[in-house]
Length: 89
Image (cartoon, rainbow, N blue to C red; front, side):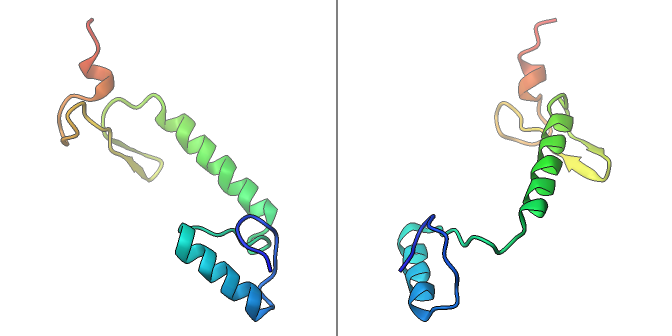
C-alpha cells in the first residue's frame, strides 16, 4: 500500500482506496506519472516567465493577453498600489 508522496500506480483497488483515504484526511495526494516531466518543466518555465513579467507592474494592466490586477494597500480595487503608496518621490 502506498500513500502520500510515495510513487504508486492506480492499477490496484487497495492503492486507489489508500490514495482516497489520504486525500480525505490530508487534502492532498501525489500520483506520480500522470503528467510527463517535460510538460511540468514547460509549465514551470511559463510560470517563472509570467512572474518575472509581472514583477515591475505597479498598476492594473493587460499585457500579452493577461490581465494583471495590482493589490492595493487596503485590499480594495482602484486605490493606490502597495508600490506607489510607499513612493515618497
